Length: 345
Ligand code: SAH
Ligand code: SF4
Image (cartoon, rainbow, N blue to C red; front, side, top):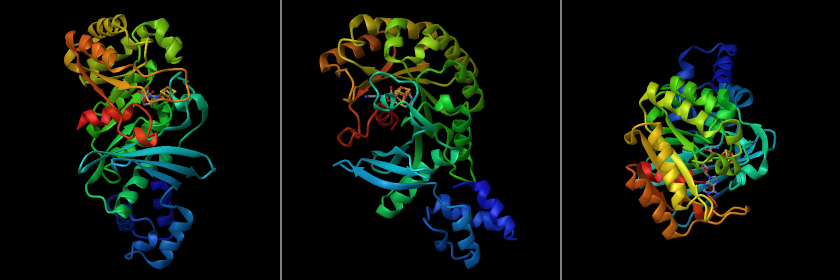
């Protein structure tokens, strides 16, 4: 919902200030799907709002549900006919997390990522980014699910720091007490390493969690997997992260997709541990090892013994490390983000 549009429409209609309060409570807190449900609004106001400021900027095309019902993946139509995916996860019986997209496609082109194969189509508007959360709140209500959706991760399609302005605007909407009112510590933004935006993010949103998709601590290997590394090599990334740590004192979550024979060898683990040691205190650095979700790319998931060995070496170096299978894998709920969620519970 575009709150400015709603407010402007109410003003044009000569409505008193408290009308906005009635609308926002109904939309964000009660997850109503139509203005017709807000009975306290005059009928002509309901109709005018539906016409001028629709509640959702996107529409359900399909929803897939995992057999254990803990992962729901929606394909959504945008107004211009393009589509985007978003995932709802239930890491524990009453807690829900939305994994949202910031762009249609992605320009970074990580070699193992299905979104990367698409290239970038366009960036989502702040309304489209946050409407994914609104969509899931409505969906949960329709399904009669218990619990609240109050965790959000920017780990769907797209690189959030490549569209920093839209990401920033969307974060303000999610944090706004008068709109979604989601706690900053319940939101995580994941970047593939757009170093120049990291200190700014720390200053703008010091309480929002930062996840960094690292995947390798060697420049040559990382540049192969994450082409962004050519523009922002590990030294630039380290500088940006040190500034972030100094200014926020917040923990950073590192994502590392384990690819068989590529970045899962003992020497890769040791390079990672060395790089992290240089970066800051181990209490502020958490490693999430991600089992690769098969995509249409020339990579293979690490086998269990290699993953275990990798984890052991990082832990022996003093870093908290978790390795998980992905929630939502059975519906191609994609990506490593699902792992991070499980770990946060
Ligand atoms: N563009 C951002 C956020 C979206 S991707 C980023 O890259 O951080 C969210 C996470 O899923 C990233 O850590 C990404 O590396 C990981 N990922 C991408 N493709 C994957 C795959 N096939 N299997 C497992 N994790 C994957
Ligand atoms: Fe883009 Fe992230 Fe996929 Fe890389 S992993 S291509 S940055 S969405």
